Image 1 (spheres, rainbow, N blue to C red):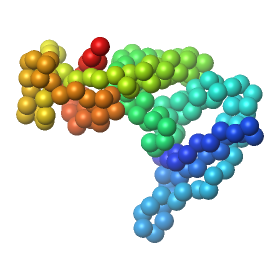
Image 2 (cartoon, helix red, strand yellow; image 1 turned 180 degrees about the vertical axis):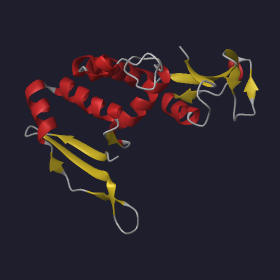
Image 3 (tube, rainbow, N blue to C red; image 1 turned 90 degrees about the vertical axis):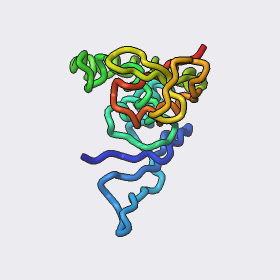
Image 4 (cartoon, rainbow, N blue to C red; image 1 turned 135 degrees about the vertical axis):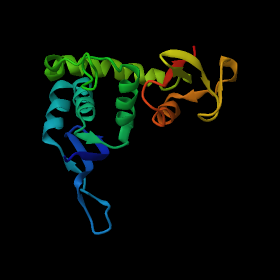
Length: 182
């Protein structure tokens, strides 16, 4: 399955320009071939006719569906955040509550992603800790590595959200949760 690895998105009064690589095209050394910046007519039309909010919804939908990947703009980080925070969403196709009709409704999906993206931008600055879960119950807090767990919140290692998302990928699903500190 092919997808675009987004390197850069540039918005101007004339339209939207992308610099990207295609996941199915590599050079002799195995590096992705990066295409020169080019205007994207589809996203340009959305941006120029419907505004920045609708443009952002369209971009978020592409990252959510997996058509776009890459670290540009934190969109992939947002997708990881949303799949971690809202695991049982009807828009998450890995969820038992997945609803194909709602997922295919672009307006509902766009609104859901945009609302959560705004929350993500706020949460991104918030400090958090990782709760260790054993047999469905809170066991303690992550301290330094998987061998060190402490029942006191005071001794827990404090993360920024991006660092916590990176750390949580190392663990089996359902064994570590993010808890935001107020």
